[in-house]
Length: 220
Image (cartoon, rainbow, N blue to C red; front, side, top):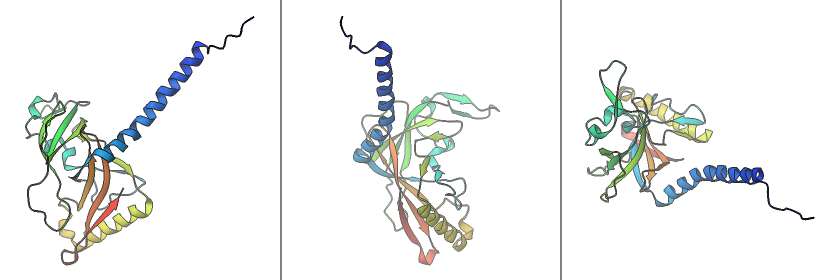
């Protein structure tokens, strides 16, 4: 009589499935760690839906000027992206689900006191570019209906820090009521790796009146 210690096929399949799921779970943190270590710091201009009442819950949603397809239409490479007509056939959008890359360049203007200056989009491409200058990065996005998502839209923030930012923005609004229609006084600092993946690093917020304006940085 012999003892067969070979695991049964269902048992082996179970462990293979568990290993595969574990690898998937660990892949996202590993990617974020890689981007944190190797990524290049750049700045994006935010365009939140409610600029002065932005952070209401533990999970925040952020939009950027490059989140709007309207802001990208005039760039080189736009015509090479697959398109889809709008419902009223008056405008075309990038076909939802399309992955592509936005090339951003460092601002060339002089560094002035105030918020860090956002990087500017200069071109679009379906394939990841392999040769960029030192003042350029590539950001990977996916087209949605009229919008672009970069994996930088949703994040969590501690309550104390969230409340402090809201207080600062409310103070800025009361001090400068005529500026409520301008770009919000918030920019996002991110890191972008060579593959176009990005992670948020911090928020920079401008507060106070013109004569007593302050710039504050909040780590994420």
